Length: 255
Image (tube, rainbow, N blue to C red; front, side):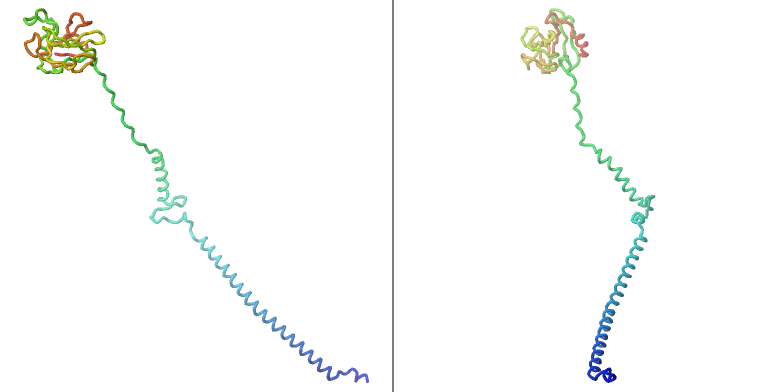
């Protein structure tokens, strides 16, 4: 009875066989899944290894190329010049030197040239000769049949119509005299009178004049034998004095 109770029945054997079969199927499925996972993972890891290795190789090659490439300063110039001590070419040094040299020229460029100062106006003479021509036909103090007394002035033998100029600054007045003819008298600021006689006509009859102003034109009016200018000097409007020393004292020689 004990042996019969311990022996499994057919039904139990079939159940056990089914359970074992199911276990084997589950085990085989799990193994297949693990194989598939390993099959996917391993190529992925291999691919990652290849990519990493390639990256390392590329990075290493780039580093080697960078370290092997010469610095820009060490490159030889294309114009054949040798680099300087700092690696730059002579052309670069010359260019920088030229720029440094040109700076002061640009900074100190002159502006427009200043206009030259006008020449000073020469001082106007205080005394001038009464006519432009030199030479005397009669001097002071001469005696002759043409004068009732000694000659009271000097004569300039000029042609009729010659411009007669004021010898000094002053005030001019004009008059007629039977001996002197048409005459002009200029009184200077210091009181000296200069007489201009035997005139043909006047240019200025009265008013203020400057030394060198044309006041009349020579002629032969009055007691005269021909065109000429009779010139006298009378200090203070008094008696006549020799005009020659007076003119010479002013640096003028009418002879």
